[in-house]
Image 1 (cartoon, rainbow over the protein chains, first blue to last red):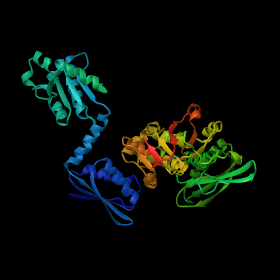
Image 2 (image 1 turned 90 degrees about the horizontal axis):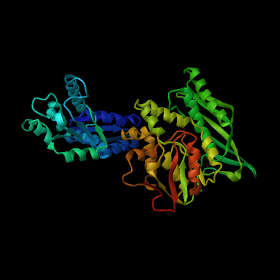
Image 3 (image 1 turned 180 degrees about the vertical axis):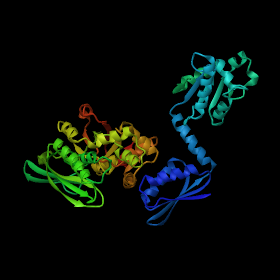
Image 4 (image 1 turned 120 degrees about the horizontal axis):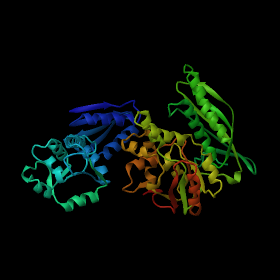
Length: 201
Length: 304
């Protein structure tokens, strides 16, 4: 698929804004952006470099310049990982779930709230790096749990789901675990030590 | 006395041994929506060159381009904003000239006076000096983001506050200290004006982590809400500037960002820097010690 954005006559930052809009809509192919001055071209080149996009420049005449940006399946991912990694390199976010209910009060309400909480995690722009589950929270990771699908979705997007092994054994749920891996107290402590932010429901 | 040679901020003409006049002129199209605020900013910007020379403004003349068909009330608000800033500066608005044009533009020609032995020029910094900046950078980026509807209200308010603040108060602080070089940061950006200050005689080390800036400007720059003018500054300065790896892209852009009514960039002996900064901080705008002058090196400006 080839797409063209004609940004002639547009002043910075509009060519960049139009280009980013077009990139978001494309899954694969080549995006050509036409501008009418070298400075706009340079600003687009700067953007492409910063975003690690494969690109090439072409100048047809003094007032016609193009940048060709190659978009493939990894471009979208590259943008996603960039978004996840750059804040993460500044620190990690760990979600700690210590119970299968959220808050104290009625357990039925608590379970509804917990389901909503885990779902909300999947909707975050920047996903947490890790979810720790211990005590009755391990019930969320097993066969038949209301939150299983959401936790699996998080795992698919690169969030590390870690379940307390002692707890799984205690509740006799070792065989039922359907998402994430099994961890120990050492890792539970270490993860929280290293986290720059810890989120608890 | 001071003319075109060193791209200085204003022209200086000596009348007697202890009296010279300083003249400057600046006008531009609106960068904010509110006409009154625009008038204030345009005036603060035009007056700034006078203080950058160490002079005191005395008279000012309006320069106005305004479409005949546009609501004249808008113009009266622009002029109101301008006239209030001239008054605050302690100068007299003595008239002006207006013409019909397709777009609005406003500014002033300002005349000030100075003892010719006490002129600050934008050259004269020495190794061992430190560089002080009296206003935050990033107003160009914030205004750019604002034009496309991406700037937050808070960021725009900070930019407006900075742009409308007279450099008078910072200049009054500087008068108490030995100033080796002084300029105001405007269209060429921080690095462009620093380049003029060094004029091939010494080098400067810029502390990228100490640059006063509007916080959200970094974020907008990382979203590439950047101007053509900033890129032109970058192109012009390319051979003079070395940016060490690890300096965030957003800060780079802020350093090249053209400023409207930017702060004073002052080169002072290291010994007085802390005291200067303490006094400047009481004025209420982000400011900082942003670098130091060193012996000439292969690259004129090193950013780390």
